[in-house]
Amino acid sequence: MNKFEINTNRLNIKLMDEDGSQQLYEKNYWGLWKVSVKGNDVFIGYILVKPLNISSEFPDVNNIEIGWRFKEENWGQGYATEAAKAVADKVTEQPNIKMLSATADVNNDASIRIMEKLGMSFVKNYKDETQKTDVVSVLYSKVL
Image (cartoon, rainbow, N blue to C red):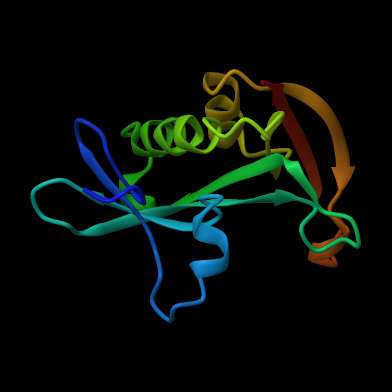
């Protein structure tokens, strides 16, 4: 197993690098982590890791945002929580990471539960300007 792979009891998690573009990010574990079930290697979802506000003029490289997206047929089985925790544990081993954050639609109760299971607390509601909609989002964070 290389340092960009994580295995849990049920899952294989690997930092994706389909076109070589990940090289800049690998040292920080930023990027998309492919999640598959052990034994069949079928893709079930992914974990995203990036600095909070990466699209802004001053992204916060000490506050890492983690997010997840899984195929609907895999919802409710604990895969997202298991994968997010494993990746968060790996990412936060870095001494320069001071905070772990996540965002979600304010009505996405399942994602909010995952944030809470990761030890994050509610910070604020806000309008996600990057989405160009009136969707209200929540920000949860955990000081490390």
